[in-house]
Length: 497
Image 1 (cartoon, rainbow, N blue to C red):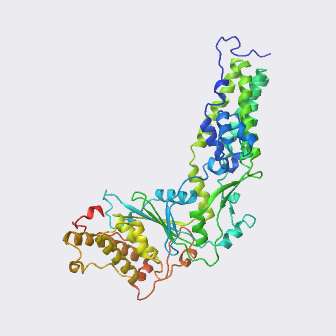
Image 2 (cartoon, rainbow, N blue to C red):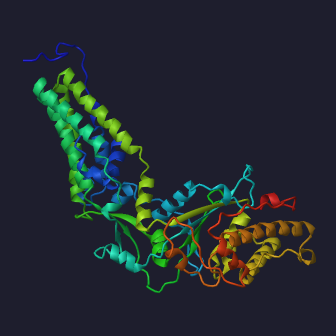
Image 3 (spheres, rainbow, N blue to C red):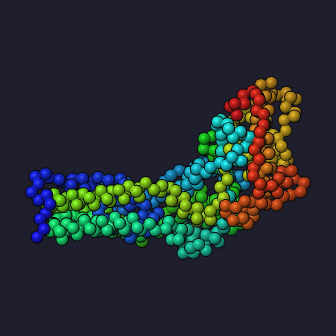
């Protein structure tokens, strides 16, 4: 029989005390990714640390007096626990229907977060010198394809009006690394059994492998869907905007009621066969707790070399879990959502001031009540701001550049206020000229035809309308946006606009 290494060593290594807690957060984050990385459902057969931490977290999902007694604490929805829901999105205003949502949900949060990461090309700097380091206000345009209620119904008639995410939308398998981790765990277990004749270490490793593998299978058995509201077939477009702080910028949404209502009101939902009781998840949580107790009993009886083998499986598994935990789960969620809504086009621009960004939003969206949009984004209620808003509304209705030639004759404003108004109108003029240069939507009737007829990610080239100065620029929409260079020399109070 082979002589067991370190058999006569007086050194004692008791790894059982850390088996249930070490690396618990990494293990939970790794196991939580099983819904976004579907290939992981069948590749969790490795011994892992932190089983007690994971068991306590998942133990809050089951809903029954028994499970509430075993795992006390407030019950949590699976999607919320796994980070698939619970984030708050920005304020939303629909510019045609007038709908105003003070807060939106998790899906809107994903869209807004992605907009922050969209880069601004040099030719999308509006009224800003490329070399300027001054603060900028971004306006991101999100153009959705013409996605209707029928499209949602065709995607999955069984779940309609909800939307079950097709398996093909999930990230492709990365099974090689997971297979290596599983093989190394198997090698360690068989080395303990057949080379060291150490049943204790062998059993401790196998118990961990079985519990983790079963947990991944059960947790991965839920189907991920988007819960949404059914909209009326003849609903008008739900064009609108997300608004936040100046640092967050403004996000303009162009799309049908079906798709934008899904973004603003919908949410991810994990559908398990035994919901709402979730008894299987409770059983898995109990199994993970049992794993800790079993390893707590087995490891102290194992020889030193066996405990080292056991600890080596922990180190390998912890490193793999840390790798999985490092993945950006919100980015994975966005990629799924992006495929469901057929990959909308994101275009981002930078404006010199919040004032020009707000004016650009109003010129581009053509709201039914422009003044309401301006008041919402700029709540200032002074004579100067009211005059500016009136002129911008007039420019939108008359489809012309905001006028500033009669400022001197305004008897209601003093000289400083006239200077301030002039600076504000310069900002509005920047917005108007940008809208013409990029080719803006039809100002009289916002339509989805321009979006639906163009594949996502390609340039839009809507028709120009003769005699309309605001629409004639649409013929140049496939050209790069021009860079504006305007002299901003010293209107009073301009730096705060």
